[in-house]
Length: 304
Ligand code: BDR
Ligand code: CA
Image 1 (cartoon, rainbow, N blue to C red):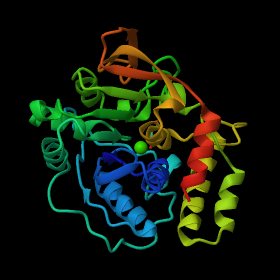
Image 2 (cartoon, rainbow, N blue to C red):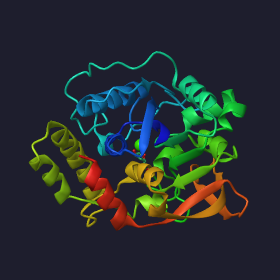
Image 3 (cartoon, rainbow, N blue to C red):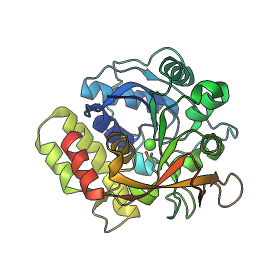
Image 4 (cartoon, rainbow, N blue to C red):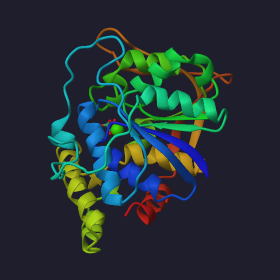
């Protein structure tokens, strides 16, 4: 089993990625850390707890960054994609489960310190918590085994504007710091996630199982599908961004990668752009191809 720290900004596709990870015997999720991004950090924490409650899993959740590393400007959250609550307006009750005491950044550092060269971090929101951990304990963080990031758009256009992907543009300074840190990164960006598609019909199949948790995921995914219908008419479903980062942790063969250095643009019109340059010495593996059919099948076998 791979020991995992899962950094989320839960979010509908984050919620699906959580279920996929928690149903995967290859992964041992030690804890979740939350970040602002799709919603404010308080909501990301609440949503993470709500998903765990639906799945009947008691795994520690540590609240993390509420704002960017440097800029501190007021955040705008993509309610048209993830809903008012971040879960497609499905979160009816306040979860009974509570977040753990302590900060996300300290949880990350403590875990890596106690298990050097063992821990994989999967990060599927803005990279603020990871950047804070690297700033606070660079020596400890050099013992992260692998950092799998859902973020960036290296050879393809962005999804927020023609240049930038949402997780990177939400905190470009954090992304720049993390991608320049020399940590062993696998970058699962729009280059590959936009090739994955969850077909609309699957949501009806989930609901038809009659399982409460399946209904919960079906309702939120319907909301996400509507956003995709508006932004990508004709796709017939939605992309599985965050779940693919989990898929790569389970089965690295789902993707092909190229070694590149990545520069993050932090100023001007192209802020958030991830510019890749081939470098056989780089510690960053950029996913450039995906076996989407095999991955989507694997995801569907496990998520519900
Ligand atoms: C990423 O942005 C968020 O909206 C999703 O949860 C995903 O992590 C896709 O660009
Ligand atoms: Ca996310």
